[in-house]
Image (cartoon, rainbow, N blue to C red; front, side, top):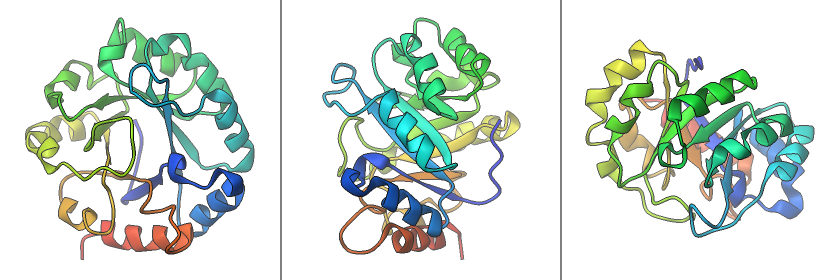
Length: 223
């Protein structure tokens, strides 16, 4: 289980300026950041290619923040150990990519990380119900995975109220990813969401990651 007493913003490193990555991560920390979200794409499960364990290992040397790796890859079981050895504290996988979801979750935990499942916009939240006692975290995608800059899809939360009691009972952290910014966060108050993944809302040319983080965190807490 993952204990979160207040809403968290998890900046997606994919939107950062990689030529100044260490500086930008430090700015996130100054803005109150505790978690970094790492979008791993293989060009097969999703039509985009990003990075692998080597970059995560480098980021691990830059910060002691919690690193959560979202594996948008085929056959994740082959690579989970590499990502955890590189420094991932949390590993999130898509059920459809696992031969046995239970075995994959167990593998992640056995290797010393926390384990979570991801639900895409075209999938029902009910697909995670058989695994609630085995998982630490649920990530709901509010955009189609693979690319940044998409608009938030509120309909992905239509069935969430029915699942919330079981998430709370099993102490599963609830996270959302996609189209999260200063306009959409206020609409998610009282939704039960604990952690918000934000990319361009944190890393942009309009302000520093620190200031963007502070603005998002302030909006994540109901008045």
